[in-house]
Image (cartoon, rainbow, N blue to C red; front, side, top):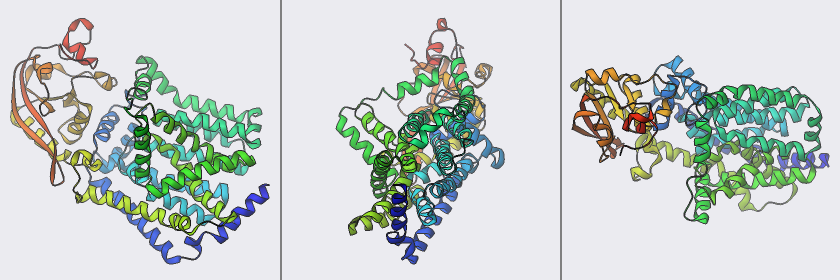
Length: 530
């Protein structure tokens, strides 16, 4: 049976892979287009302002710890490494993300070769991945999804080498990959049941239950995640609890529409045709792997199809953010490309399906190029609140204007009430230690306590979204006055506005820790002042 499968796959490579065997001009054009996207990534990473979350994660990198309120710490380590080389710049913040996209592409290529030994197909998998909006966004915007994607690709590669070589030592690398993925983002936990499915459903996987290597690999994974668990233990499991709540709190009004929203978001990030082929490929690989007990196919199916199904089912009862399913795409793209080639080698495929397969990466390149143009030029007439690229515009100018006001009024500290604006003003302002969020102080558990002496001996600025109530903070000061309303521009259009208030005569208690210290303690816990 294995010989039959290998033979059909070989016929697929010979008979149906027209893009690379019979259309040299198309191959060169597609490769050139993807290379142009790679160059554009570097330019945009160096010039686009940091998104709110990126600036917040950069703030983490100034105080490294075993964990943080929102996520595990890997992205902070990556940003710290990049800024250690390139300084406090946008490129420094994103350098590790850019590098991981290249390294991850190499891992994807080697994974494809380890499983199917077809260089043309392996190259096509790399092109498909690098054409998607998801891959390009992850390379430009440094978030926990970026290291998660890389370490997921690393784990998949190690599993492919395990299948190819049969050497148990690969389990140590698999354990390290899983541990590092979890230290990147808790969503990596979904990979563990997928791995068990692969082990249980194939003879090649089941034999490892009687060997010590998988258990030693698991020990390596546990050792790697221990600092994250330890940090959570020391902080009342706050990060685990926050993410658990985050996964159940946003219930959709309409389950059907919520599932459609998830589908549309994935079609946008993976781009439509590639997403359709990924869904097909994941299902095909899973069914073929189970039916024939083929470890190669089941690896791709088990590492993608269950995750996709989980999020589809979960979307009926919970709003799913578009980036959450991102870890399934390394396996899904491999399954999409190789699944189509296998089917085309076994039966006659309709011309429109073959045409769709050929067009898929071109459509993806067009989607990504349009997004890049919008980010760099703002050419499309999209409302700023509906334009994802608006998150990366206008922050440097806004930070400079608030820095000017800080100098003019002799303010020692800038106070905020949102983590997003805190990170942006810390990055684009004078000194990150002089920008302080007054509420949700658990976000800064690893940071030094705010220096209230600076509030006692000098004015402060309070920056709030325009129209927000300043009373919860102003009651801790003798005087407060609005001195400016500043607009953050989105290219040629205004995006949002911020009120800047001058605060003087500090009364104390804003950052009180004890429950009996009134409003300051409530703000510290993320509550409100009554």
